[in-house]
Amino acid sequence: MAPKIPSRIPLPPLSRSQPERAVAVLDVGTSKVSALIAMVGGDGEPRVIGSGQKPCSGLKRGTVTDFDKAEMAIRGAMDQAERAAGVQINSVIGGFAAGSMASTMASAEIDIAGANITPTDMVTLRQAGRAAIDPRGRTVVHALPALYTMDGLIGVESPLGLHADRLGMDIHVVTADTPAILNYGRAVGQAHLGVSALVASPIAASLAVLDAEERDIGVALIEIGAGITSIAVHKFGIAVGVATIPMGSVDITDDIAAAFATRRSGAERLKTFDGAAVATSRDLAEAVTIPPAVEDGGTEPNKVSRAALVAVISTRLDLLFGEIAQALATLGFVGPQARRIVLTGGGADLRSIADYAGSYLGCNVRIGRPRGLIGLPQAQEGPAFATLAGLVLFAASEHADVWHQPVSSDPAAPRRGLSGVIEKLWGSL
Image (cartoon, rainbow, N blue to C red; front, top):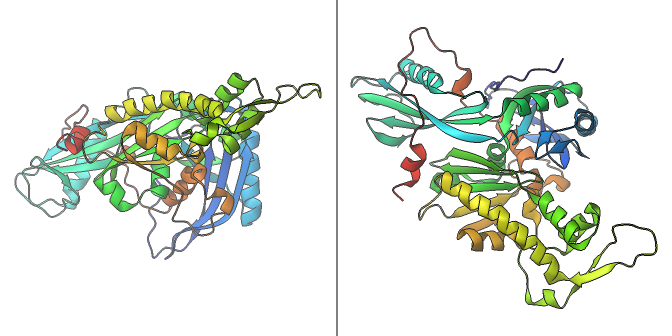
C-alpha cells in the first residue's frame, strides 16, 4: 500500500546549542533526481557530506508518471549520497513543485482590548489562523505567518509585548493537488525512504539564492526547471505569493528537435553549447551543425545559422515569459519597487537569458546560484541546484507553520476568506 504523506510535518527547530545532525534532502525533477546529505546544527553553516544525482524519465511536468523509473532514479541518487557520506538515511526532506501548486492568503483577528500582547494571545491568534485556512480539497504544503497587523497597522514584525485593541495575522498558504503529492510519496516510499517534510521548490530555492535585503525590498524568484517554472514573490522579508507554470527548459529542447529534425539528445546539446536567448550580429554569419535524427551513416549533418537556432529558442521564451508576466501581475508584483528578478533553475544556464528577461519584464535581473553551504560539490554549484541547496537550509532553519498547530476547544473567531495582503504590500508603491 502506498505510504501516505501528511500535508506538512514541521521539522524540530534547531538552535545554535544543539549538536550537529545529518539531514537528507531530495529534489525529484522532470529530468533528474538530486540528493544531498548534510550536517546541520551547531555553530557553522550546513556541511555537505554526500551527494548524488541520476537522470530521471519517470516524471512529466514534475508529476510522477512511472513509479518504477522514478524509484530507480531516487534510489540511485540517494545510494550515491549515502556511500559518499558513510551514513544510511531513512527519511528525506523533499522539494515539490507539481500538482498545480499555488498560494492563497488566510486571515485571522482577535480582540486584545488595549492590553499588552502576551504569548497566550499569540497562541490564540495562530489557532484562529489555522481555523481560517480552507484547503478546498487540496493538500496544504505550507501555512506560514506572513504579516501581523495591529489596529490596522500592517507589517508588524514582532507584536509580542505591544498594546493593541485588535491583533491580526495574514497566513501564506501554499497548496497542491493531493493526488500528485500521494504519487510523489509512493515513488519515494518504493525507494524505502520516508518523507519527513515537503517544501515548495521556489521557497526552498529562495533560501539559497536571495539575500535578506532583496527579500525585504521586494523580489520575485523565477525558477526555470525542466518541466515546470516556479515563482515566489517576496516582500518585507517574507514569501507572499507562489505560482507555477507548466512549461520549462525541456520545451525549448523539444522545439529545437522539431524545428531541425534532430533527436532530443542532439537538441539538448545545441541548446546548451550553441544556444542563446538573445541573438548577436555575429550569429547570422556563424553556422551550427544539426546532428541527424537517424545515425545510419548515410545522412549528412545539416547546418543552419546560429541566428536560426536563437530564433527558435526566443520564440519559446516569448511564450514562457508571457506566462511569467501574467503570473507576476496576478501575484501583485507591480509598482516601482517590483523591479527585482532573480532567475534560477536549470533554464537559467541558457546564455544571455538574464538580458532577455530584463528586457521582456522591464526589471533588473540576475542569475541566482546557491549559497550558504560548506562543501557543496562543484558540479552542483549552478542554478539548476538552487532548490536542492535550499532544502538543506530549510532543514537548518526554524519555520513556524500554523497548519499543524492544534486548535483549542475555545478558539477565537477567525475572519475567514482571502486577505488583501499582497495588495497591502504592493498597492501603495
